[in-house]
Image: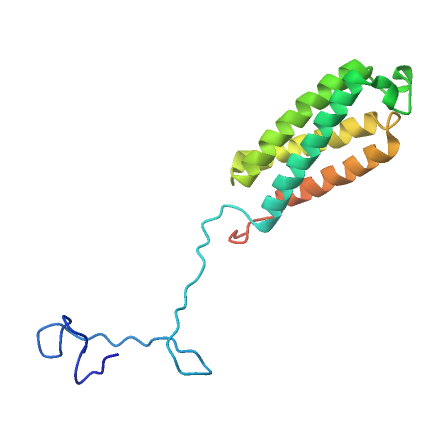
Length: 169
């Protein structure tokens, strides 16, 4: 510690009166013991908020579910409740390729959201909306799963549009 009268006292450091001005710095002290302690603030370099990270992980999860659904549609169409002719549009083969494409894009976009990319937010909202509409059309084949996937897509869309902590209107 130094005082204004004596300057710095450690060896090799300047003393008062040697041409180096002494700066008065008020150092934070621990309130209970009167000892010095370091105060630092976390840097806010992240481009997103906690919601963006949550939305990114949920988009990755929803994309993985869509990939599984696509593979199931292609490899085991008898797994679903409805027959192929009871689907609103397309057959199970077409739905398999649709779910694979949407799922792979969702996983990649979710990874982009986790990396803080702005483009991934917009594409994530679009993919989640597309997924919700597609699950509505696929509801006859797997009703409860489709409802759960629509709810997950709505949650992803909300997480993607929540503003950052540092955003100003």
